[in-house]
Structures are given as structure tokens and as C-alpha cells.
Image (cartoon, rainbow, N blue to C red; front, side, top):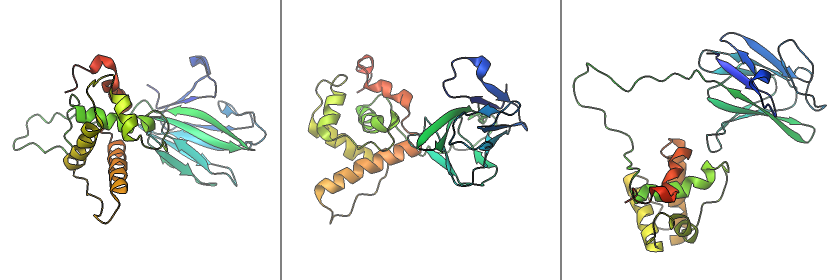
Amino acid sequence: MYSVIVVPPSCGSEDRQITIAAGERILFGRARTRGGLVIAHEGVPRFAGEITAHRTFWLLSNHSEHQTYVVENPEGAGEHVKVPPGRLDAPVAFEFSRVVLPAAGDLLAFDVWAPRHAFRSVSRAGLTGTVTAPAFVLDRTKRYFAVLAALCEPRLRGEPHAPLSGIAQLVERLRPTWHSVSRSAVYWNIDYLALKLRLRPDPDTAEPGRRFNGRKESLVSLALRFDLVREDDLVVLSPASSEAAR
């Protein structure tokens, strides 16, 4: 398997993808180079940058003199890396990445895949003693998890800075799978989640509305940062899962 696959803009076929193995590199920019990625835009430098494949990640060099490049994680709810002008071999560890280049008022993008991500098996056969306690224990069949998923949904859907849903919006979002949902039930589950995930309460001096909104923001921030809720988990908000959520 190739270490890195570069997918040009509007690429609709595997024939146009550029594959490189560990240790290999390609140039990208306005100029045509052998095996490189051509971005035909007057706002892109002739030699805009370079991608180098590693075993399980890749490196980005920014050859621009003035423009910062941004590497986004499309699955990371706003997670991104900034590569300033002149920076060489900035490591990128995202499995799926989108490189965004500012170009004379436009934002141009192409994708980079690093499919060779490796993970250590969680199985530790042969070891004795107590098992390490998990950092967060969440039951995906419970209604509190559906509430957490509904809170995280806007930002998981590709809007990393989306405002958090209000209680009325959460109630309507949860109703297809939880017919008896009420405002007080949503409040209760959010309070329970804050306790379960050991989030510090806001100062008692804060206004009640600010305390509650801060609690929601803290829950979403924690859940997305540590992948407690992923896009795949949004299935709990579909009617098919209504019998499982209790």
C-alpha cells in the first residue's frame, strides 16, 4: 500500500491520483513538474510547496514567501494545522487531510490521504494484574449519549464554529427517536453528562443562563477533542435506533 495518495481538485478517477511511497516526494504549484501536482491559478506560486511521504504520516513544505497554508482534518470538527511561509517539512498526522491555499482572493484545495496509519492492538495477552480503568465510560445505548450526540452534531457535520443548539432545538432533534422527550429531560441529561465526565461547574457567581451554556460548550469541546462522539455515532439520532436508546 502506498504511504500517501494526493487527490487533485475535482478528481473523479483513480487514474488522476498521485501515489507516493515512503521517502518519495512531489512538488505542487503553477509550474508543470515531472510527477507533480499542477494547480493552474495565477495566484499560486510556480513552486508552491512539496509533499514528502513518511511511513504513517507526511510532511508539507511551504515554498511561498507570503502565504500561510492550512491543512484541515475534514473529520476533526475544525482541527487544522497552519504551515507558515518558508516552513519546511511540517509533519501532518491526519489520515484524511485537505490542503487549502489562498490564491488571489480564492481558496484552492486538494486532498491528501495517508492510509497506512498503524494502531497497536488493545489486546495484551499474557499480562496479569488489574486492567487500566478507561478515561471516559459512555454507554451509546443510553439517552444521555443521544443528547451528547445532538449537541455535537452541528460541528461534526462540518461546521466547526457552529453555535450550539438551544434546548428547544435539542428537543425537536431528539423527538424522532425519543417521543416523550421534554425540556426538563434534556436539562437533566446535560447535568448528568457534566457530572459523569467530571467537568468542573462554572462559578456560582455566573448567571444561570451563562452557567448552562458554558456547560454545553465544555461538553462538546471535551467530546470532540477526545473523539467521545464521532460522525458515525450520529446514527443514534435516526429513528432506527429509537428502540435501542434507553
